Length: 120
Image 1 (cartoon, rainbow, N blue to C red):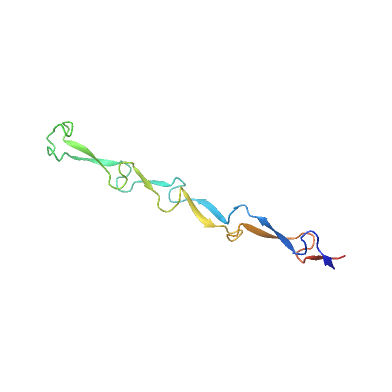
Image 2: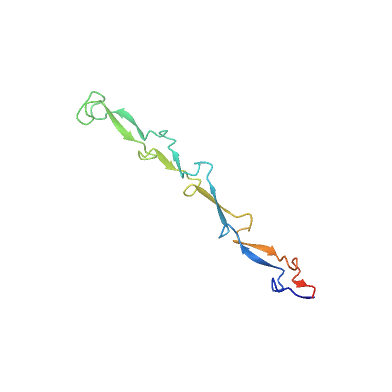
């Protein structure tokens, strides 16, 4: 028996995993990969219309004589959307199951079938 020259007697070699760094990005199922959700407080309206506190609905300059003023939602600050909160930029990051987070995969040598030796 002789030491396998294809794997230098190691019985195999490490190959870089497709994940590159041991982590995978999975699109978030909560927000669909968008990273944001419609505000659950205002249902995406950005706020609501309330009776003018200055004239009590009778009409004045403050409310443009409509008797109502628009109030921004405290939760989304009028933006109509909020951060998902379950993901990061629309993705869930997890440890790669192929390489167990190592970023590389052991491949058995095809020449010696993992023994590290070949028949001389």
